[in-house]
Length: 216
Image (cartoon, rainbow, N blue to C red; front, side, top):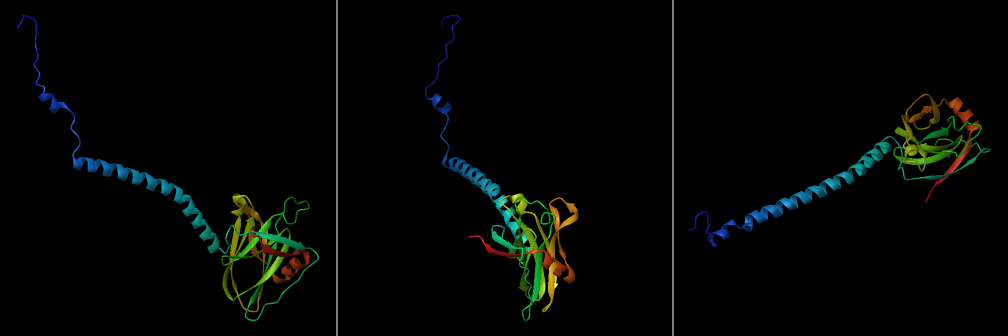
């Protein structure tokens, strides 16, 4: 060997041991399983984020119906007759309920874009009013939940609802009015109040009669 020279002799067969080996069947199976699990988890998280708002809306709708309101997607066409002031009587085995819209907006001298107010009983809409108006309907004896809700294309307005529980007796007449609260809370500018029968008759005399049908 010449001085100052260093020769390295490499066995070509030894180089094969330095090459990366292909994963075995079991390792390959574990890799595939891990990738599949990660993909499944990602899919489940996406579905969860999509489903949560829907579930929240369903819960809100159920709560509103439990309070007496009907389905929020139901809307009404309303007509009012200022010169008509009909009254009713309870049918046999029934009670009669009058509902009035008597808010500050209803009594304003100048009204732009009159609001339609829906009235619901035990989870079903029974009718609607527009401006200072009223209507009446028959109910079975027993406990009931009366609810009012704005009809609007704005979700924030549709969420404005108030409710009241009452117990009806056969042969009796009940009067309820939606009025502006003296001490309104956020989102609760109105209140639903029971009206004395004598005052209820004054409401009949001073309010327009409301007729309505469901929009198709």
